[in-house]
Image (cartoon, rainbow, N blue to C red; front, side, top):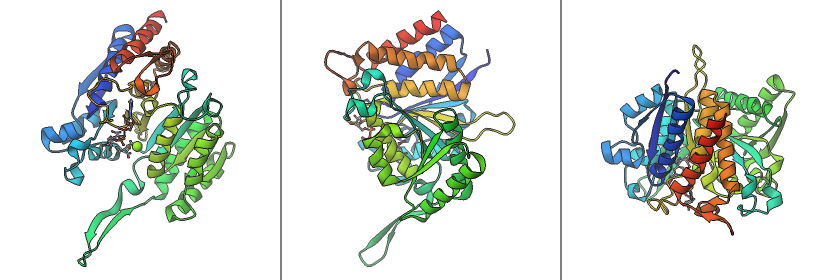
Length: 372
Ligand SMILES: NC(=O)c1ccc[n+]([C@@H]2O[C@H](COP(=O)([O-])OP(=O)(O)OC[C@H]3O[C@@H](n4cnc5c(N)ncnc54)[C@H](O)[C@@H]3O)[C@@H](O)[C@H]2O)c1
Ligand SMILES: CC(C)[C@H](C(=O)O)[C@@H](O)C(=O)O
Ligand SMILES: [Mg+2]
């Protein structure tokens, strides 16, 4: 079996705690199905800053570029509030996304049947939910220049962030949205703010053209992003694939996370474009949540978003669909068995910590792989 190179970047806060649980699953894949995963581990975020003065070192960037896939925990925390802006922990993640050109960020929000009562919304609103937020990840206001705070010299300052999108950036994320919708329920909802932003007008124009010229058989709808956010909470099941820009995608996916019961449930895949020669695309997989400083070090974080991110990695980077299905099923069965971390705890269920949840999923995953 050819070796498959993984780079594991645990990061800060709960990052190392949930990364330890994903390592158990990788070991099972190697043992039971000889998956041939070779894992290197490196520092990122605040822990990398403490080590070398950068949120991601050039050496780690080289490892990321050479890996078949990167598994990322989470970065950030109050300890690094005072570090220079370009060295803050989050800058490490943004460099990985930008330098690896990971323009397509898939953030699925699924309501597991066992968690239909864990959401703050009523059961009937979220039961059976299966939507995909496709967030543009390498453009927009996150990266546009200028980005600065200017001293105006009169006791006033001016802060500037710049939202920029070029044609090719919208075209490629729109194509990705339609291609994903084709494998699902065939509907794309594009969200922007064309009523106030030039980038919104342009986004709408380009997505509409790509639909007309290349995917006329699929359904395209448009929503202003604020109304879209409202509808995501009022009646989320009307959506299939939501395609949106970097900033709206960040916010809408945290909202969508809560539909599923907890931010600790939402995985993501960040994909680049396929290499012309090999077809291989650079990829990074990470939970949608952050480093959760409020619960870090207590062993109580929910590792499911991280474990399900490995599931997306198996599917999108290695076409290991059987193993990915087994992992999804193991997560589902664990929840059906009433095993819960604190964030999704319900009456009559068994409360476990990060390691307990990781073990419960690992046990069911191993059993499923061994049977097949
Ligand atoms: N991809 C990333 O690395 C990433 C993503 C978001 C935020 N951040 C960073 O994380 C730090 C904290 O940000 P925040 O507090 O706004 O967001 P957060 O996602 O870290 O936490 C928000 C809330 O959700 C809870 N939560 C998050 N993940 C959980 C899990 N797996 N299990 C149980 N509860 C969980 C936390 O305890 C907290 O109450 C900041 O520095 C932020 O920049 C990093
Ligand atoms: C940590 C931060 C840079 C990041 C973002 O804003 O993209 C996070 O919130 C996310 O959702 O991945
Ligand atoms: Mg976010």
